[in-house]
Image (tube, rainbow, N blue to C red; front, side, top):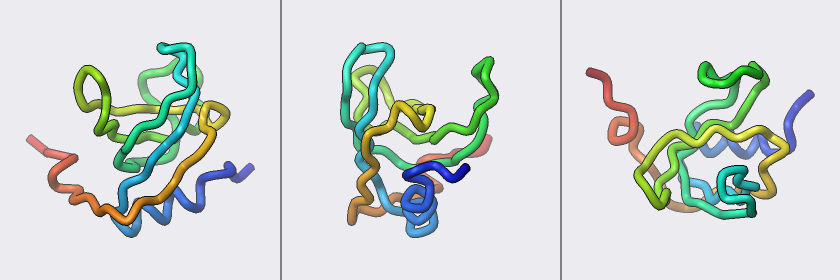
Length: 94
């Protein structure tokens, strides 16, 4: 089954554009919105459930920038922004 926001998410990755994502945060117990870099769509290695998820680089975390992996049902909106990102500044290989 194709997820509601998948086409726009993939478009944002291909065009190297930032997104605003509004989602239900289990940690905060409420809906929040963050500016993010779209990274990938697929299962997470860190979770028990191996279902497909949206993976973002959270640019506005209150702690530090980190990967944000969201189940599709957590997401309320993905808005593609005009702002671009440079992958080499996000993914750094040692």
